[in-house]
Image 1: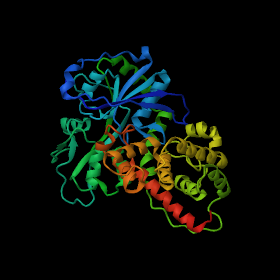
Image 2: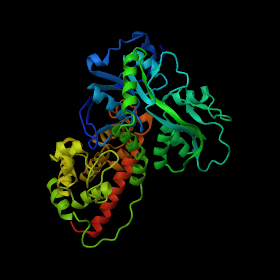
Image 3: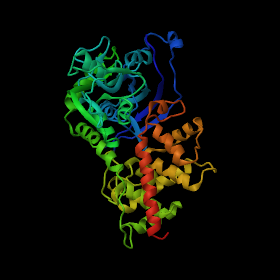
Image 4: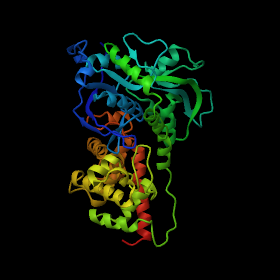
Length: 472
């Protein structure tokens, strides 16, 4: 058996939902288990894999990245994760997730862990590899050759991940790769990191699927498409070789449900994610104000006072979240003025159903969640009040777990875990790089740090303006 990498275990419980309220997942992370070369002989060649229809629990290996699986606003999200969750909900099967770093050795990992399936934007090859079972395509994507916009010479040497499914799909089948000689990089890197390296002109070019390219272009618009190498490449789930019955049942379900409203809604939701990121990262305009900031000033003042916050800071958060539009629903299902997730509104604000769009109820839910964050996180007396507020604001966007991870990284890299700018902010940005989000001190994995950094920056930019124009 080949070398296996760090595997982080997470238990996830599935609860019923509606289309307008994403499924709530409860996630508990345990300490990483490292399977190293010198201990590989201690692992059985095959860990028994048990029929999930008997145990009502399915174990899934999945990669933690911007497209497949990530945590955002306290929710477990990701295109492939959510598509599989539809199947599990109907079959009344709970889900155990094992986050895995190294997708090159995914087949060995299925054997060594006894997992039933794996997900990670697997391009289904024309001729399947031995001892690998794939589902029917769950969606299709274009494979794109990309470069920096300033690169005018012919592209000849894309950096790619050795033995990754998309590389095998292109080179094994000679799909539109004439004149391209791949440069193979570490199997512990990611396509997202390679796209960042294109942006910073550290590599000539790379290859990625259209979903990831669109997401990264929202942050780095100087990444441009040089060529479409393959159109409509099929993406599927991978199954343990002893799980052919599970695969057949899943395929039958997929044929029946692939064109349903719920299934298409998930696809469409993630198609809108790049635009959502782009909108969030736009530079905040300079406004002219009258005697009021918004129609909701009095409500904001009342409930900001209830949590001991300057109403202008709460208003700044609302401006960033919704631009004072009480009917707004985000790509991920966050609602109303404070863009509260339905689950969050019900748990912390006792706000249910359509009431989440009522301005008073929404502000109650949002400020109640802020109060909960304050009571449970960043309580160290050495943290200045304004810095603590920055941590809370960042947590409102990304979830407190990612901010705690960033603070733990600060301790490791000798930065100040009690200061946002240049310290915790620096490490939240780092959590989009595998070196950092795979670190043992991190419990919550990948984070779109650039979004959280810009989110905090914009809100405190608003706050500075509002403090000038409006009295406390």
